Each structure stands twice: as structure tokens, then as C-alpha cells.
Length: 330
Image (cartoon, rainbow, N blue to C red; front, side, top):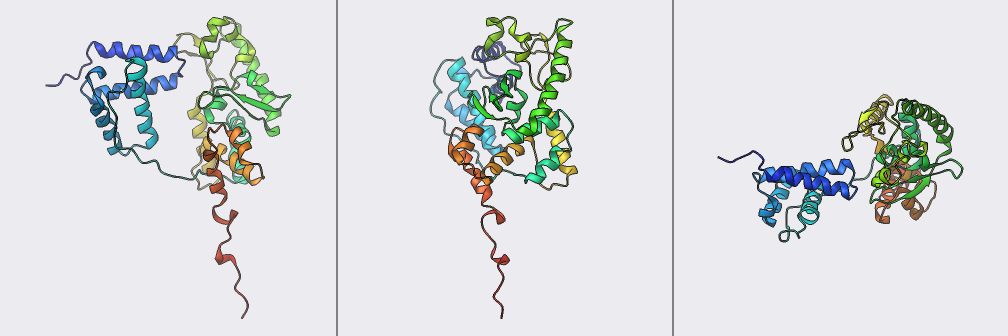
């Protein structure tokens, strides 16, 4: 009978994974995801230690995911976690070439709202969700980029936003829309009052990236490091055990946006990311060049940005249907 209980190696191995990920400043989201995939990989092979496996075990696991019709990004995520395990934790090359079934990556056009639809959705939201959605659309931010904004990242004088550690761990600058300037200034006054209220009983510290809290012990309580969109409640940091005020949870905005789109009568599948797609498409419609939009979006390759030119070529935006041409009079 197979032993499904973890052996004494498994907890130690996972602890090593966690320690190395934290040393290399991986986000807690990535840490949880990688650990889940590594645990799942080990359980799939009846608790066998990865050192005792070869490339055929990895192929079997990835093939099983492909048969479950997971998305290509999910399968790639699982492979990245296993790759991290072997190269960074076990410090060895992959045990042989991995030739697994690859999940098909579908070529889909992004969902884009019209300008009217964008404001129909935004105007039905309550703050802070309304302000967040305005920035997603007006600045082209990814959802987590927006929620992780710090006070110091907003430059009202130069009318831009600095995105720190965006996708690919890169910084970039994007525009601060005039539409959001006054609401954002009013919002930050309320946030500052909340921060001062937290400081009084000894709270007010915020998470700092790359262990900056050790280098600058008092920086985590400074106003400029606070989140622009803080949570409405204090919580215990899962890594440090400290009581802190994190940024707002993304799930609340997802639900609110979906509900607003339904109330507006939109038949499109709208999510917070739809605002970003709409930002890029509307800039193209306004005549801005593709390289400028690429920089604002933070895309590594211009081919990623080019997808929005395909959106522009749909329907009546560029090509007129022959059914709309009048036949010559008899």
C-alpha cells in the first residue's frame, strides 16, 4: 500500500523553497503559487523526492496537466515552478530534456469597451473602486500595478505615475490623467488621515520591498511609502507576523466591475484588465504611434502591442461591409 503521508524530507524541502524565494525577493503571491505546484508535483509521484526523479517524471506531470485541458499559461507556470526547484533549490540542471505535450495557447483578441461603455461602468462604481478603475483606464495600469502604488509614485507636478517593479521587474513611467488628479488628491488626504490615526497606537508600518525596512528602519512608517489604496482594516503580515495595513484586495474590484458592467447592460465580458485594453486601443484610435503605446503599457516586445491594431481592424472601424454599399439605381 502506497504511503501518502509526507516523509521527513518534504517539509524540509518546501522550507528551503520558501527561504530561497524570500532571499531572492519573490512576491508572496509567486511564493504561494510555486510552492503549490511543487507540492502537487511531489504528490503526483507518490511523495518521491525530486532528486530521485528524472525528466520522464516531469514530462508525466506536465502531460497530465495538458490532458486536463489547462491553459498554456497554467502549464508554463507549473514548469517554471519545477525549473526553479531544480535550478535554484536543488542546484542542479534539469534531469534530462523535457519533451511534454504542450497546452495550446489560443490566439484571442482582447475585449475592448467603447469610450461610452468605459464611463458607463466607471460611473456606477463607488470609491475607491471608481478611482482605481479611472487609473486603470486613464493610465493603462495592470490591476496589481495600480493597487501596489505608493504615495511617492504619484507625481502631480509632472502629471505622471511611476510604476515600480512592474511585469518583468521593470520600472516605467505612464501618464496621470487630468480626470483623476483632483479625485486622487482628495483621496490621498483621507488616506493620510487614516495613516496618522494608525501611527497614534504604534501601527502605521507598511511592507517595504527588497528588505528596505532593514536598511531604513523608520521608512516603513513614512507617509511617502504608504499605499495609495490601503485596505480598510489592519492585518497580520504572513511573513513577518507584524500588524500592517496592506493594499486593498483585488477580488473586491473584480466583483464590483463585473456587477457594474451588468448594470450598464454590457454584453461583453468585462474585467479590470479590460480598462487597460481599452486604454491602448483608444490611444491608437487617437493616432498615437505604436512605440509610444508600447512604452506606456510596459510591453517587452512591440508585437504584444500590435494586437490592438487587430482590434482596430474589426468590424466597421477600418473595413466597410459590402452590405453597407448602396447598389446603383436601375
